[in-house]
Length: 483
Image (tube, rainbow, N blue to C red; front, top):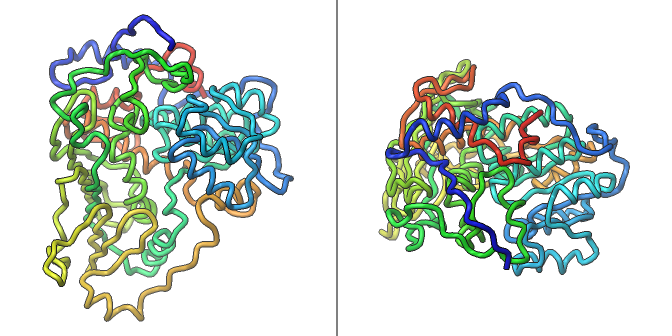
């Protein structure tokens, strides 16, 4: 086991009790790099940052994060028949969660550090698939784009508002193909929502309720449950198999503890984006795009159960208020998460089903338009008109749902070949993820604040505004913020 001297605790939280000046001092240190006018990241090495014209039969794909969700994504990419898996990278290469992928691709070169993989194999890679924890999406994507590589990254795009801004700028500068992994953006709801908006079926929406009431890893967990969490987890020896420094990526220094691993990183503000970052990209993504929501003018933490300095609440109700957009009226999107934080049902939906049992909803949305209410589940599930009687009456008049020409993975790979355009590029997914990043700030502060869509600044809460930047990166990771 590797050992190290205990690190200084990373005080990135800022609830009541944390001296304001201490938090601002740490965050303001990141202000030397503009969040909104990033300079161009210089690619390391001799590889040009301009993508080469695709000439091969298959897209040569390097994969960072190969266990858990990564294992499934890599399999899906390979199953399209369009990708050739040419390199594998995981900070804990050889650990149990990586064995399935390693067995499937035994001849692919293996790396623990994505920087070594990309620099060594730059000439043999067309695109990079990123399925790591939220905290490391940004650095891997930036390194890949600077080398002219196309990028597929699981949701959310990045960990902070600032990182998302820089990634969108890099996509535009390097002219690479990008795709965020909200798979429903290539399924029925994507095509249905667009068709119904274009036909005027969905119109003048003023209210959306989105929810996720499944248990998350920190809900009810004795080791993480509020108020037991009073600090970061105690230092443990770093396993010999793990590159902890690379796992942290741009995050501040933290001592290793196994309690941060295996998906539980999502519970911690310093590493993940909570339930909002996990499920919102699958639930209100189509509403965000086709109702032209953009960024809100106000964000409010309406209710937080189990508010904590270090981990996400046990339940959250957040309100995002959007202004009028052209002919579209102002709209309020309310988000509910937590196992017992159910949203209010629309009056058209009964509390009980025909058999008298409660209607059990776990994740989805209600959309309140002019004259019609729509109900949808998560990912690519289609919308239903409420009530059922009205849906039956107007079924013959509803526009048909176009068939998807490709799933989300094939869509990305075909775009790399110049055949299609990606449906969730950073230019589309970025503003969606920025909405969620603002929601995370409201959760961390337990606050309500105003946001200027034009300047992309919080106008009435200095700490919230500084949180747009996030914490300064550790030494050796600063270059990813310098465009």
